[in-house]
Every structure is written in structure tokens, then in C-alpha cells.
Image (cartoon, rainbow, N blue to C red; front, top):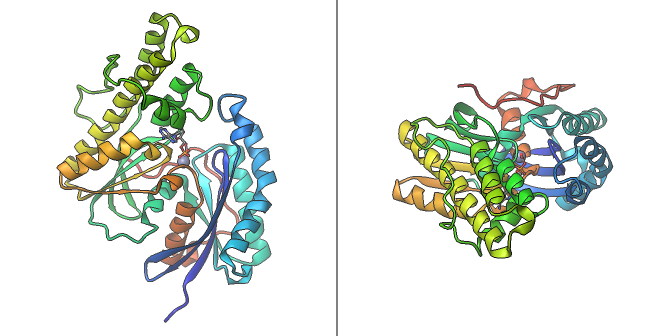
Length: 346
Ligand code: KG4
Ligand code: ZN
């Protein structure tokens, strides 16, 4: 029996400094360790990610996070076979921090280096328990920077079949949360507040509802919330119940759009499975609505555990393991970052 491939991975595309160690053998993954340093306190004062400070914080957090996973996994670094790192998409300074660290480790430890697409990492996180997948699948990647639908013939074979024409869904959650004075990142706070609100209270437009295409749009919905708040006398004059009702009304429409397009896409390509990833896939309403719609349509739904929906290095390391084992000669001694990398073309 051959030895398992031990992969060390880094993710720093936005504001989380994350590392993981994964073992991969006979197409099966085992998570040996993962750690993450969040920059929540740095960016919350600005109400959004401040790119320069994010890059600096990555450099500061890098070594402690790396040491943490090495200790957790209880393996010596000599046992690591490959180093994987997010090469894009993401914030350029943040990506450079991760790629520089990974390149340095690759030279120090004399190990090959592979670059991974951040969006692919969000999909791979779903495979951590080695589920049996019936292909083809629809991939829904929904985060603070992306909202897109992929036709996945099998892992690694992606076709982009829908994407947002303007804002990402998570970005809209964050902006509406900011308008309601909920801090940053706003998605989880808005979703919590929505639980005590009435989703029927305010009628908001379902984006691109009339068209049969698979694209998303969130800027019109966000603007409709801005107008609604203005009509109600401005943010400062909203009472707690009004805020909760606005949060619930917004969340219901934002999630309905994701579910509607995902099921439409699944029907169009005759998919057997839905794979959802990215920060917004931690949203309880999305998870329950998508599960119900999947069951109704005879589709299997794969979703990550809540703690692995937002950015982390687990999926990145898994994707790196597969990439390296398929093409071991594709390893790099240097890597270029690509802030606008895509996962597939239309
Ligand atoms: O994947 P991610 O960590 O970073 C990007 O790649 O963008 O996603 C972060 C996004 C943020 O916009 C955040 O507000 C959103 O995911 N998010 C949520 C929830 N948890 C995180 N949005 C709605 N409901 C949630 N529970
Ligand atoms: Zn992400």
C-alpha cells in the first residue's frame, strides 16, 4: 500500500489567515489539523475589510497559525509532501502574503508548491467526509465576493452557468446590515435579527424573477431596502421591530433568489446533486430552504458544516491534494497571484 499524501495548505485571500493539514489516499481525505486567525476586530471599526491592514495582519498571524496546525497534526514537517496555497481570486495584498509564505516554506522544506483557486476551495470543503457523489452536480458558490452557479461534470470540471451581474449576495447582506446598524460582517447578525422579524411585512423585489436565465442581481434589492428605510424616516428612526422586519423581508428574498436559480439550473442540466459553498452557505434559511427544495426535486444536497462555510484552509488544502496527485509535474517554484481568477468560463 502506498503512503498517504500529506498536504499543508494556506489561505489568505481576504481577512482570515488560515492553515490546514490534510492526508489524501485512495481518493479519500482525512483532516489532520486546521487553524484560523480572524481579523474581525481590525476591520469592524471600518465597517468592511481594509485591504492594507488585512495584508499586514496576515504577515503577523502567519507563523502562529502555521505552528498551530503543525502541533495539532502531531507530524514533523519532513512528513509533508506538498504545499498548497490560494493564488486567487481575492485581495491582491492578502494573496501575496499567503503566496509569499507558502513559497518560502516550499524552499525551506524542499517541497513542491501548488496554487489553488479560492472558489474551488469552497466546493471542496463539502467533500471532507468523503461522500459518494452522483454526477452531474450544480455548484452554488455564494460569498462576500462571489455569487455563481457551476455545472460540475465531476470534481475539477466546471462550467460557469450563472453569476451575479452586480453585487455578491454576501455583500448585499453586509450592506443592508450596515444600514440597520448591525456592524461587520453583517450577514450573520442580519440573519439572527431576521429570526424575530416578519418576512411578509415589506414587499421587496425578487431579482431577475421574470427572466429564465441563471444570473443573479443584488444591487436592486439593496437599493429597494435603502428606499424603504428612507420612507420609514431613516435608519436612526427605526424601532427594533421595524429593523427585524426589514432584515427578515430582505433575507427571505435574497435566499429565495438563490434557491430558485439553483433548482432551475439543476433542472436545466439534469443534475443529481447540489453542492453549496461560501460564507452565505452558513445561513440557516438558505440551508433549510435549499434542503427542502432539493428533496422536492429528488436532488441530493451537500453542504459544509457551518464552521467551514466561511473562508478557511481546509478546502484549499483538499483541492491542492487532488491537483498535485493528478499532475505531480505541475508543481511550481514560484506562483503568480491572480486577484480576479475565475473558476471556469461560460
Ligand atoms: O466565503 P467568505 O468567508 O468570504 C468570501 O470569500 O467572500 O464569505 C463571507 C460572506 C460575508 O459577506 C458574510 O456576511 C457572509 O459571507 N455570511 C453570511 C452568513 N455568514 C457569513 N451571510 C448570511 N448569513 C449568514 N449566516
Ligand atoms: Zn470565500
